[in-house]
Length: 511
Ligand code: MSP
Image 1: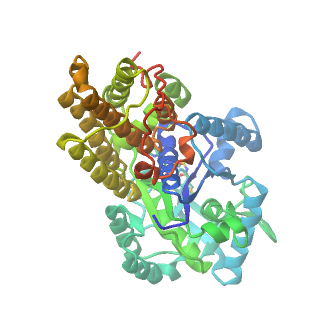
Image 2: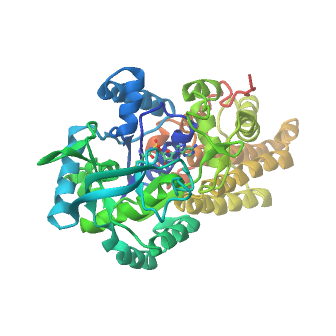
């Protein structure tokens, strides 16, 4: 809450395929978190991008019969467009083929070399093409990649290359983990990382000979800087490491979100590289679970649906809400369109949308569409306000700790309580007798004000719908500009005209 700056990153995506719901997941979460931080008044900087070098990209381009550059340009546009349609408000988008990145990576490689942490040797051993990772004999499991999330066949390789002295950082990393129990989250990923490091770290091959689609090593152009130094450095090069204003302002990152399949690169290699550069480490590396369908990770090759069509069918907000609510962050999430539609219709449509609709209709019918002045409160209003206050704080606590599902659950207790309050007080019955006028004013004011608070809080998750609800409540301005303090300091004003419009959450049906 007292922080001024907040730097948040997603992994940079391989543009070998268009984004799908699986790759969109991290970006959506990052966006919600960024908007939430902005709501708290923090200057949040949100970076995402594409990881455009390497064999996989060369291969994807060759399959299409175009140059790697033409391929990544095409895919970059596809990513950009999907992010816009999903209402992603990133501050920057880094492409590893950009000049600013390539010069930055060369600088970083050179610094590591100058510190004696890079050496040339011959590599001979197993290599996983899919993971773009070298493995030792002891690590390989029956001829397969030992990454539990990969498990594909490895090939034998012998080539000259540059190595990073990763083994030197084993104890330093363990010490760091001992002192920073929150560095890797969730806890299970921390434990996994810790035992992996304890088993021993080997020096890491960080170049590839003959790879054309990569950043050449200065003075030895036959070799290219390989995947992980290239890709991981984006978090620094994008903000202008080592001396630009954004770097000085935002580094170290506050939260780096990654999928569990790339945990080791981010929890071991990345901090070791930063230690080697004598830079502070990010505060949190959070490895989330996968979006799965019938237990299997959703991916392009496993038939992920075109995300543009999904956005057309369901709306960006429906997808965003579902992904944050469906499973605890960190765990795998079973995705199905039925579950998405059910949740949307029930929670957004019936519980929140109808609450707003009913309230606006009553404001129109009983008060000419103007927010009435609140009169004497009863025990019911006190109870409602207490719950609103308590759950507001809970929402903030959970959201700040990346417990999105729990945050939404706390928020929904307010929504449900507002519905219960409406049922208990039954303003539609009271309206029949003019002597209940004052009581009716208090009830409709309390409902409208309760909804206003919910709208402010839910905005980071469903920005488009929240803005529509905001305007229907008769409020001006963009929710993007609103700050948390407005929840208590700036309640609805009596006399404001509301603007009931089309339902914000029209019912969805599965085609
Ligand atoms: N380019 C590397 C990351 C380099 S970061 C310095 C990479 N790219 S990726 O496109 O393969 O994956 C990017 C992210 O998308 C990973 O965090 C991965 O976990 C995530 N996801 C891809 N499919 C996913 C699901 N089905 N579910 C959730 N996340 C998944 O790895």
